[in-house]
Length: 194
Image (cartoon, rainbow, N blue to C red; front, side, top):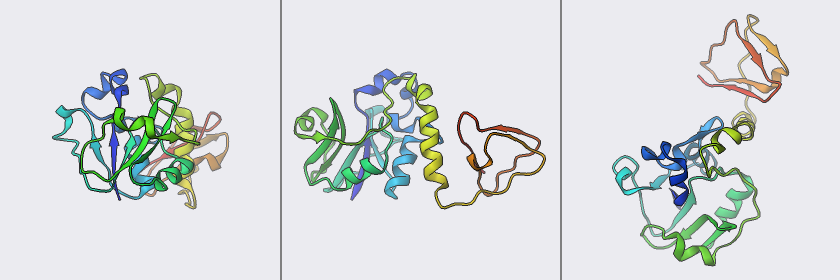
């Protein structure tokens, strides 16, 4: 199955950030929204975005494609709903198309399919305005931290560091170096990539 992240009209609310990239390339939490989808689906995604971005952000159409909304951060419930979509069916949340599975190798026309989509049972983070990137970032960090650290062991922190809060809320990737730092986890977890 092929997956494409699409931009809906929300891209205009996210200007100037979306002048140069699709909505899903915005970072909220530890990863971009594209990286979150790829992490959950285990596949690379292509993009249906503004025509002037097509050269850099290509679209790959097939006769079995699932279009997912680039402003929505995925979670397990949503992924299960999407994987169970029948051909030519979709899910929405209110007036927002969340995902649609198509058997045609053409761009998605949201207005043509949203009325037939059924309501999603999932609650998820959605980036609708620039301020959402900041106001929803804490929750996105917690979700990404839980997913990225699941069944993984952090590198140990050097004794030169001071931790305020709980050590278990700090994760160091292999290759990360932290020395003589104060790490405060009282407001949320800390993920340090290489």
